[in-house]
Image (cartoon, rainbow, N blue to C red; front, side, top):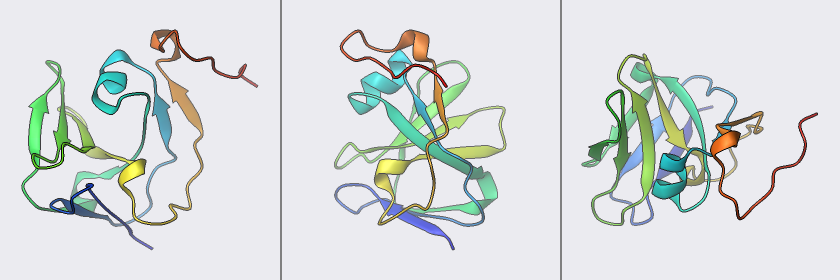
Length: 120
């Protein structure tokens, strides 16, 4: 079953076809700055993500860019220039995702204002 999602104002909508990858929560400083805390996402191959609306892209490093809504500012997508998949923010998915957060990445860069549970 495809996952659908949108930004806060509804100007950007997407459908992720196929099986979305197990999601990860990223604690890097860029994800914290763009989302206000951590950024949880999943991804699908580029050709399996259908996007409607005028996404604004910001080249956040020399290797990756982030897609957001120019109207409401919702942070929605992350794309590494050399990868053949695109990540979408799980918070933008409409309804249940059926996914389970399986990884926490860049935990060494996490904010000092929260703790993470010990790894199992």
